[in-house]
Image 1: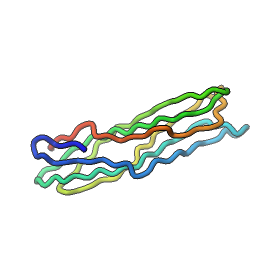
Image 2: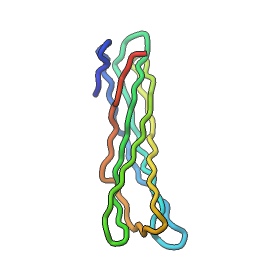
Image 3: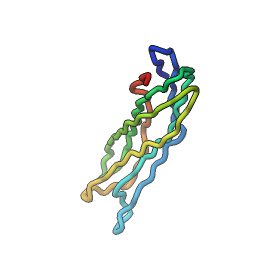
Length: 123
């Protein structure tokens, strides 16, 4: 939770869902890429007559097996939202992971995900 300092308005972001959607190669059963959609909701108790601009950053880390070893990779996406009086907004951050054609990725899992408020400003 973050507080906008001029109005003391509270803003909270909550992850509502995290998925893992992977595409397999046509020739064999290895993965060529994966998407990690992170759905989240932002809520504020702002009671003023203007609006708040809220910058959110969502991150995910995956762990995958390739060529007999385990590796990790991470990605992030930032987005801005405009919230008015006692409002909320929902969004999905689409994070993408691609693997080299030389890597034989046989398993993938999401090991960490988060969404955080980077900045709240009065507009």
